[in-house]
Image (cartoon, rainbow, N blue to C red; front, side, top):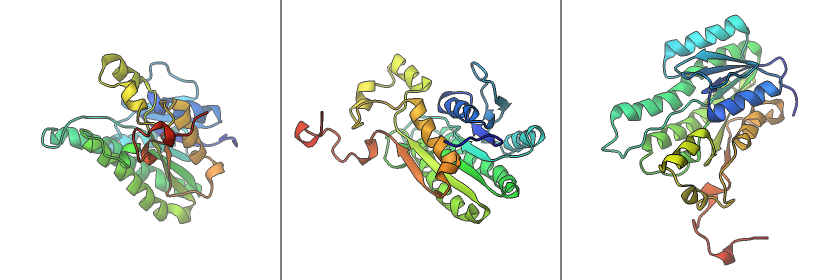
Length: 255
């Protein structure tokens, strides 16, 4: 891939998991990266500037972008990755929990894009990539807030792509499936998640590695995807296209 040297990127939720992997990859490819996260990193990475930010707060997001202005003077890439999870059935989950999921995922995208777009217009171009999910395409009982937020990200991606195309700003999304993050590993360890249950629903019979999600984000962030906008790349090992969850052997191709 071509170098990102001279470009400045903001990655929300960049201190952990997929966001940390994205930040590391963009730095490795030459970009100067700012992590916008409520959490501090376990181990700060060279080339990443960490800004304590609540992406659900207009004031906090504005302050973060002003800090980027002061330190870098530009923004070329925005990756909306920050997210939280609250599990509960409709009728039982509180409005506060439901709203907090929407606020972090979807409002956070809107607030960060609202700050980034005018700055990218002045730069005569840019790339916005948001982390959606396979939950934007399928229903997950108990995760209505998460499904709604991720589906909203896809809708906003398409609308924003049309709004800013003439300004040479591209807006796309990546929708990961089950990915082996620290959060998933914690769930497997405490029994709240079962790997056999997840793998049984993935035709490739494994979870994604973080780098496999990062690769798609990197592609959409750079010039290699210069004619793509308003699109969503699904990285899920075939999960959402599987019409028969447990196909018999005679309907599967094997070595």
